[in-house]
Image 1: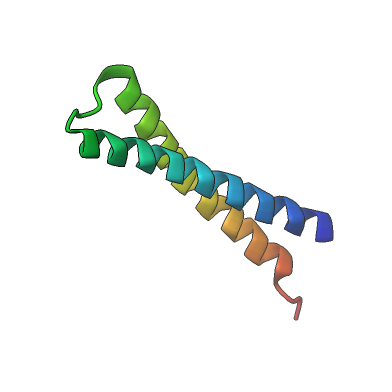
Image 2: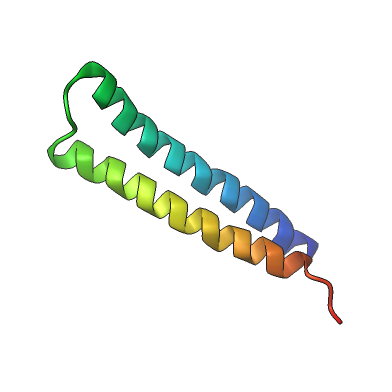
Length: 70
């Protein structure tokens, strides 16, 4: 159970990092005044959505691994 908890924490950190990179791409494009188009937009959108999805998934795994049995 301890190994699963460590995997969950590392997975959520990595997934949140993916989210931050995608958000940074959007923010940088707004600051430069050039909107993201084409492949760059698709990559940023995938990073944001998959990062959020995986972060929530690994958070649930972490909470289930640390839950006390009745």
